[in-house]
Amino acid sequence: MPVFRLSREISFPPPHLASPGGLLAVGGDLSAQRILTAYAKGIFPWFSQGDPPLWWSPNPRMVLFPRELHVSRRMNRVLRKTPFDLTMDQAFERVIAGCAQPRADGFGTWITARVENAFLHLHHEGYAHSMEVWRENKLVAGIYGLSLGSCFFGESMFSVHPYASRFGFIHLVRWLEIMGFRMIDCQVETPYLRSFGARTIARQEFLLRLEKCLDERCLRGNWGRLFRHHSPGNGGKGDLH
Image 1 (tube, rainbow, N blue to C red):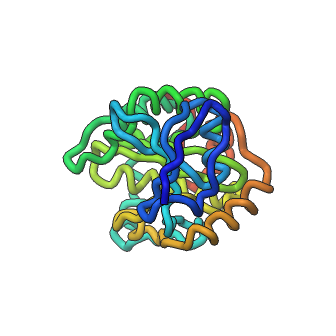
Image 2: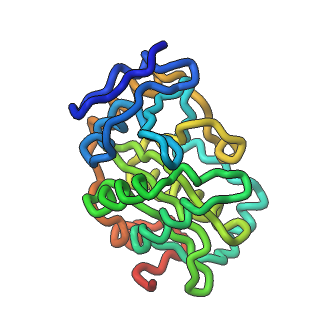
């Protein structure tokens, strides 16, 4: 399969033309319009520092349906203790900066300064969102992603405290279910996400489900107040930080 080179025009080739590894196109910019167009077509950017933007649409695709969330016995015990406080959209810049820090496994280093700036703009536009996990008023974990219709596209997470990212992820999924989200795009398969009940589906099925999600209202704007008023019993304390 050829890899398509993007022009200044905001358009993408059909996802089914991606390479066996999922690479579809190279080039273009990271404008809000291009990123939103890409995600609405089941395509996302993923590239390293110094490289041009690479656009992917893997097959199969890992997703988590909120109603299928699996919580282990150990995490249920952690959840009952509620050792953390939670907020949403109160420290987006700090969360994406935390996700961009290099880690032992190398994960997270794909979040370049260009990607950070692009998602900060999408956050200000009300499309990108973060879940913050706090302990003793210190940010110890965070998750961020993009919202379109009733689909949440998970991008990355970080943690500096045992169980903190799991605690935040579980509550994020439960909250998304409360708010009517039908699907969480996890992009590529990992054992970590599979442990929560995520599974792979064929790209064609993913695109059909995504199309239905996009027909529903987009929950645009800052989610902080919504989270305080519709939290799933998680100990969230709002704008404390």
